[in-house]
Image 1 (cartoon, rainbow, N blue to C red):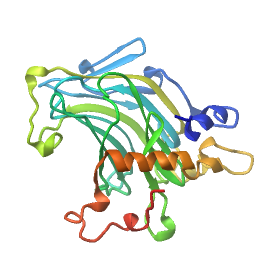
Image 2 (image 1 turned 30 degrees about the horizontal axis):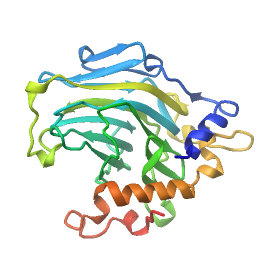
Image 3 (image 1 turned 60 degrees about the horizontal axis):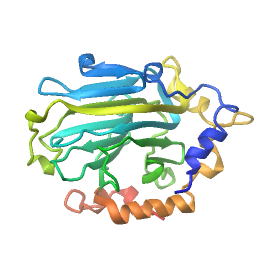
Length: 294
């Protein structure tokens, strides 16, 4: 599979042109535990989050970012993981927050893991897509990335696009480009909905459930808490001689190969798309009317 433009430009344009960029693969330089520190273990380059009947666990980035790419490699819970959810996501704060979600929904032994993505804009979500993967995510580490610029948000698995959320402000549809976002991950019990709509509950005899992480990368514009949102947006956007890699013209849309990859994922692995759910949305959501996957 060809190296994606996202990956290539991240390396080639990466450091020479940027201010306020962060790029690292060390957990403790970028992240800190956010809850249940006793259920989090960091050894060398490997991090483990543990879920048992007492608690799950989570971590969060030390800084917030606007535009760029965040990546982590995860090996999901092996065996019977029904009822569990492992999440990797970006989010701002407040009731009108923006959020980009990966949620990995546990399975009964022998059934496939499902990946649910969601996009919140100004506090409104309900944009779920759910798909299966073309590999077993419990057997090895795979990379999960979120790429974000002023044109679109792209969810990637091993640098293959699985979801595209395009800026359609010209159609009167809000787009998340005005709030800096933290990077988060957690594991928790969600057996009221996670596996087969909540019909299959967590079997605690299989606990602890462990998700393993490595390869932490943030190649994005760091936003100090002291700077106002409008100033962050200007700071993290290219202008004059200040050029950021995520604003390169080649990243303003998927290239032909990436578009074909996305179509393949949708055709072969899409299980649920909110745009097609007429029971939930008798009136098709506006972005679905204008969004073409090509």
